[in-house]
Image (tube, rainbow, N blue to C red; front, side, top):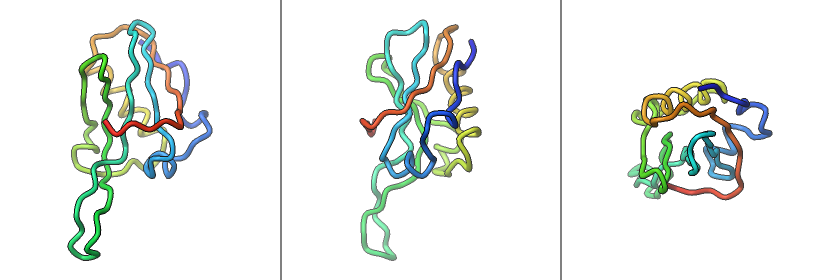
Length: 115
């Protein structure tokens, strides 16, 4: 299994991804479904501001594959510092949770799914 491209070459920023303006999709050459990378969690209530605010998350999900998994930072609600460390975490998560030998291809979408 190899990665065919890099997130940093897909003309997006971490800020766009965390704000939910764009979303990463992951395709595997030997699987028919797409994995969606969710970086914006469900809103939670902030007692200080008395408003609902989105939480930070990092997970992959695929309805077709019946899969939902979080990265280590996603479980701790921590942000990634750059696209390279995010890509490394996503690649590791795919290797550990998906039965695949296919190549990994990342793409960016304007269509954002929350799960």
